[in-house]
Image (cartoon, rainbow, N blue to C red; front, side):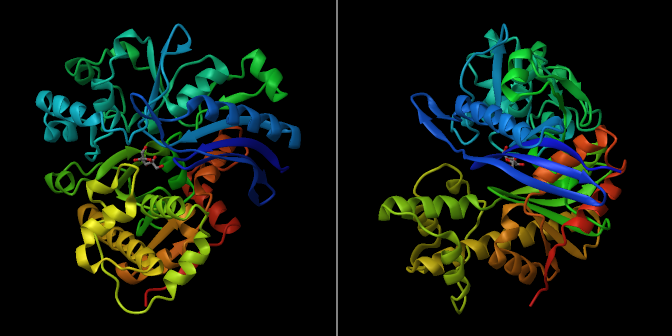
Length: 465
Ligand code: LFR
């Protein structure tokens, strides 16, 4: 077997990257080609993504990837979920909104007046998040002008290839996909005033979306296919979470901490709905039965506020080292409190939750954040176990959060379970694996793909203390 190469585009809420993935001869590794910042941009009508800049970074990154590795055979794209662009006559109608924009409050009220949450849950299996796409569509004044609505990875694939599709794992985060059928719930869409004609043809991870348009092939330096991957970043991360048994939970930790288990059947019970556990579709028809915990967002927004205050940058690893040295208990707040979701002065908001107990030193404050996230992780792990009636014996913590040793240890301590940390780039690895499998360069089953991840990216173990 020879080593084969693909390009992975992985867009997160705070940064995006283009990577080369190489696989074969027992090897599975990534080469970082480019990394670029991302985040909410305040415009006159609310919070947006700077989509034009992101797209340029993607194309430039792909060109650099092909320059470095001319043998690249395909491209796969994943990003955060729920957000979209509207397209008419092949053109993007407006800059996509950021899911943290508060216009969705009205969307939630209007949608629930038509279809109460309990009914929605039975149909789409999704936890309530105020930004689920259906609430956004409901208040989007331009929806009626659009031919098609494309989620971010599908939008990029469309601009690259000219083909519009909806990749299924990400489509499952819209709220308009039937949880059991895996097909668009057109009846629900129409009832909510969302024309079902804007919902594109669904494709599964592994299907080829199209080939680079000639002008793009020229810029990138090669005519390449774009292959659908688990285009919801969390779906790709779960592919590469090296779960070795059904008794392993996962936490995909970046801006968010997505905490749950993988299931083959949904758990559409009242208890699951009340616990706000979601059924997002995974690769190969699995269910990602999980709960969103506000993750490193709390830390990154806090650091951003302190940096603005100081007028200089803060070294995160120094801050975490100082936080680890804090002795004694720190106060815990509810990491999922809705007051913490919009961008802004995070230290002031956390202080408002903690009251007079709020630590005055920055290391203790950071420790309080980390311990609060770990506490929310532990609650979600316990709930996942109770609802799925599965005993859990380990937690795979993947993504950027796996580098945060304080968080890994705190999660082990607060769950009483060993935490196996890594891979840090699980999302990009999952993206690469699904492309490679489609090209015949990786094994067929998820279990074998995960075994390859485990063999090539040994996790670091944190035992509970
Ligand atoms: C993680 C993630 C979560 C989703 C949130 C918003 O990056 O994709 O899974 O709930 O972002 O899209």
